[in-house]
Length: 190
Image 1 (cartoon, rainbow, N blue to C red):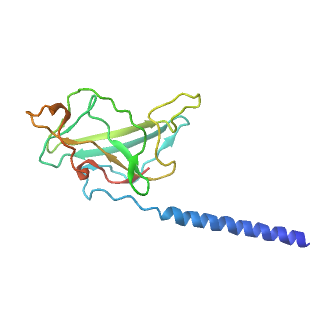
Image 2 (tube, helix red, strand yellow):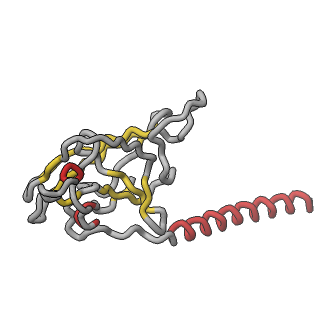
């Protein structure tokens, strides 16, 4: 009889121990600092508060619609190879913003994508990213996922630049980057 009661006590203790561990983990996870809210009235707007990242066993998939409004009095440009580039997806790691996935950037001398004042651009970021840098067959793959494997806070950013002066030799590359408040979206969950 004493062995049975000891086993029952052990079972009860391990049950309460699991609950205590779950509670500690929940408190620890909830204490991760939230991401900064982003601009109050963003130029780059993601309409929903949450999107779903789907895993088909080979790739992560997501569709994130966005709208960019050039509310500045300046003509802006997006440069790169065959612009406009898609916005960059970033995730909040608890202390800073990081790329959500590895990026491939091509350098070429395409004409810049010009965005005059008042222009509104509606588009969707179609995300197709490998969960890992190496496939099951051992081959490397890019781009691959760098962000958390759990639900997190994200934003989009776009490398918008002021249009360079015509006399400037770098006119094809644009001028300085615009302030982050003009290039970053509101935060959302993925």
